Image (cartoon, rainbow, N blue to C red; front, side, top):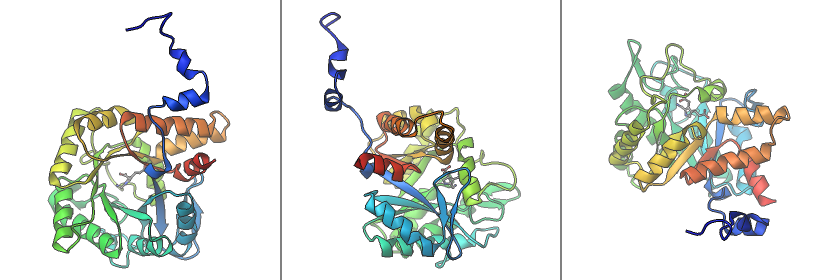
Length: 325
Ligand code: PBG
């Protein structure tokens, strides 16, 4: 191998054109999925305090946002619902007239080409705020599966293109696959939140979606942050159950997990740049402490470099605008 002074690594960094020529990774608008929060009601566009620039929309106000997203050439959105009615079993999650089902139809009517992904979980719909059915303060895995599968089916019947279970019950991917296939939806892919950690970075999202657990926490079903080998087993299980795409969540504090999953599995890999990751950069940028565009692009590039090809991010609209300039 050549050594200094023959080797001068700075030669390829001298101009932007040279740097671009040898660049190994870059963020492309076609890789992005934009999260949308929808709530019941009319005329609502309400900014989430801890997530500047991100709003909750009622279905009638959704088209204006979706048109903007489509115009920016962002290929996909992921929907999160804030229902009026909550109960023990999260029945509004699978109601054919549920909030996400209404939103799916609104998005499809506005932008038929937009890929509509739905988050399949019960925490926004249950009175206790847990992601499954609770039995004596413990989330009952197997009883939750039927409700989760029924919710995914309701989303697909309303027009969803991809369903993304985020509940972290064992066996949910198989339960969803079975339900979809039985009803003739063999062509609908499942994006499994495969390695989803019990992270404090979901804080702003839970305020936005009113989905914080009313007792306890999610550590009995979401993953323990110190573990990485376990993430590979989670991903393997979801693939064996029929997942088409897999996800690691959160993204930036878990880049090593993204890398490990990328090396072990040849499946399309998404990373979720979660609410707390967004809020941190937004807050520092608003204070003038960080250059927003620079730190956002550097962060998302790091997620790609770690090995994710798809990024779910609240920055998607801004990134699309920056990239188009
Ligand atoms: C639902 C769900 C959560 C997120 C995505 N789906 C919250 C949670 O698990 O508590 C978090 C997304 C974010 O923080 O941006 N279970």
